Length: 188
Image (cartoon, rainbow, N blue to C red; front, top):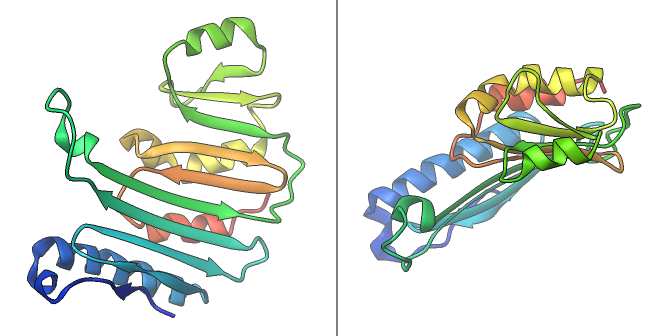
């Protein structure tokens, strides 16, 4: 079932509605091209869509945007009043890699590095930190190569591998079909 509009008649001519419609139609097309299916809805204020692709690793893709109307004048309204989430999840992703977490730098991460041998700075992207007993594993290297431009743009929020599940979280409106294709062809 495709992603469908969930909007009032007045919203159909809104440029925000048209932008959200364009994003959801692109998402729909990519999921169908990969042999998957989608569900979700969109309007002028938000969209929430998910897709599943029957691949050996059971890929799930989710995109979500929400716009809120209140907030504080102390902070940038764009960052404060808008939620953007993109998740790419591969279940049954079996690898000999130990569990790991890669995320953007946070306050006090310098203490984590000092207090734990599991934490280190990402070698190629110093504004990201890795928690892993094997930070130079082939899987981590492959993912870093594929997600290279997301590290550079800082759209990448999190990459984790745990319990045979690979999870990638982004903060963006872009779909990145070429990266999705590369990820689906990765050999763990």
